[in-house]
Image (tube, rainbow, N blue to C red; front, side, top):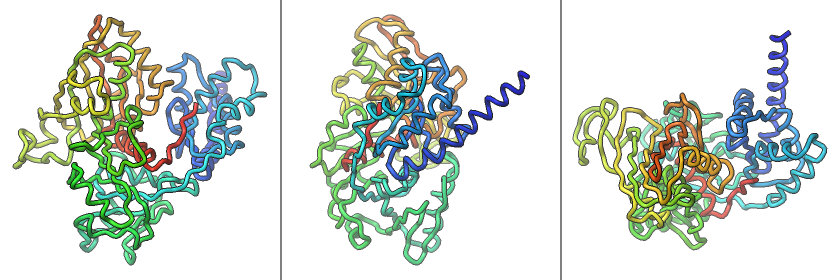
Length: 474
């Protein structure tokens, strides 16, 4: 009997997860609504992933959220004309069940909670990816997964150098298969005659050019586009400004730290600095995006008088596979075989996004023989004494309920390692088991997927620049 009980319970959960999948897909494709469970997105999730997302709630609340308890909230959501929103039905359900014994008032509750996003209309905008390297291809994946009639960021073209025989097929193959992030979730066709890729119904023009001045986007029907430069070639206004000379280009976003007076934006921290008239912005670096939200959260609660940030960073394409010449110190040595001490400007760059920490941080970096997922170790002198439990509770609550909930994740696992976090959509993940606090000194360990998590931050900056932000509810 005991064995049957567990089997029947699993069967019930599995069937409910299967029933959720078509609702989740329709909400996203038709209304631009992304559904989450305690920060875990359910878009394109398997039945197992949906079930595991529900189990995650116990780690935060000490009690389960059963699929039969959340399913009525998804049904109610699908009956509302909510548009362009990120809706956490896990948080909504837990809050509801704290005060109710049945689901008789779920529809009224959901209508009240989601009212700000009902009938919200946003006009779609064109996006061009200038460069198609690691970040460019991940941005393409993120934009393509949004394919649907309600999609507001429409990937219209990619611009690359080359044009040699077989280039188009190579580009398609690199998008289709990724050694770190796995296969592309969908189908990709090559239109060799028109130099285009068709990915999940998204027609992407491939434009070959050696400089921005060569490109006229309007001849491809592209207007007022946001050009996302992920080449790393230019980082100042003079260089990036070349994109604005291309017909059809309206704004430029750099996926690297910018020089001069260009604003470096860390979404969630200083995105309020994005103005409609801004034509060139930077999304800063992966490390700056990982550490700044956590540092802001700690500063707001405990204060920070000084600190040091040590980045343990995966190797990148800038390094050599085997020993060879490199203009930078040490980076010429084989990346897969060595830990390499190098510099990072991330600690100083924090002050551009969060000026309260100006002159208070130092930083350094160690490149290590892993291809993705990095860690920032932050040794901080606080403005007041606290305890490890108080620090972790604050960071946990920040990750769940604050305005930084889309940037900061939190784990209490004692077994987590770097590969477990490949594909994380958060800017940084606080490893609470590694937290050290003694009086007014704290050491925090923050993981981050320096490719995918950063790309998710870039997409949010893109949305803000083009005025097509999705509301986060609750």
